[in-house]
Amino acid sequence: MRRITVQDIRARKGGEHLVCLTAYTAPMAAILDATCDLLLVGDSVGMVLHGLPNTVGVTMEMMILHGQAVMRASRRALVVVDMPFGSYEASRETAYGNAVRILKETGAQAVKVECGPEVADTIAYLTRRGVPVMGHVGLRPQAALLDGAFKAKGRHAAEAACILAEAEAAADAGAFCVVVEGVAEALAGRITQNLAIPTIGIGASGGCDGQVLVTEDMLGLFDWTPKFVRRYADLRGDIAKAVRAYSDDVRSGAFPGAAETYFAMAKG
Ligand code: KIV
Picture 1: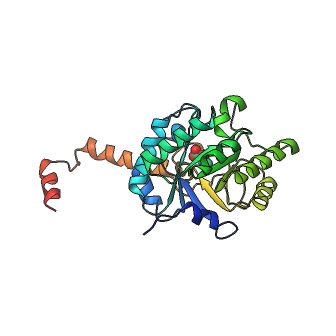
Picture 2 (picture 1 turned 180 degrees about the vertical axis):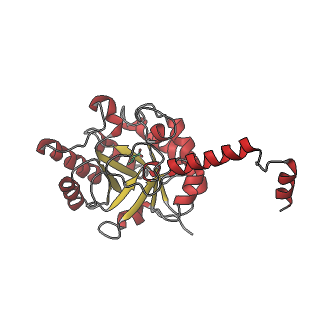
Picture 3 (picture 1 turned 90 degrees about the horizontal axis):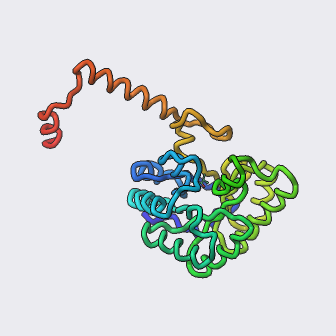
């Protein structure tokens, strides 16, 4: 089995929709690998697994550790690792050093950067030096401190034009695909039409070339789910039920945990 490449993803423009999910751990990556075209080690890991209020506090070390886990457990999907806040904005040279560190230490095939007005130049610098880059436009979670909250973007014509221009600049700079987050259907459609590379939507309608979701959101792990997310499972409820059953077993003394059980298991 060979891994899906950035060239495969780029070639899917306008074709069968791309199936993408976030993955941060080995067991989750192992489950998702067979079905997903692309696994994103998103910096949302800071909020989903580490309890941070936003993605600003996520570090290179966190991204590398989770990237390594996902790479170890996957064999087929393309793995993209987010560059965390502060790792690519100061200069294109710093961005290159950090991107290369992520690729070398994780074995992932690409990095993702959020595309403010300054970032196209950095994307060009990275791609010309052999670093595959995925862009991210629209709602940019790393701008949480500036924006004050995760709000939909591009409602006004001027902002919509900016987002379209940022997506086009990322594509012109050599990005192999672009995440489009939290924008209205009409803008997502325009971006998708104007770009020669695939767009991957999140809260941006079905008008993109593919979709990505935070896996734990769509599996129902939290008591709150973003409005645009369909819950395909109720992990939170299932875990609570399982823990209650375990608790009942332990309290009633019906728990089969004697040493003999372990020896029997070891012998098969
Ligand atoms: O960090 C992340 O998980 C992301 C996706 C939600 C697109 O950027």
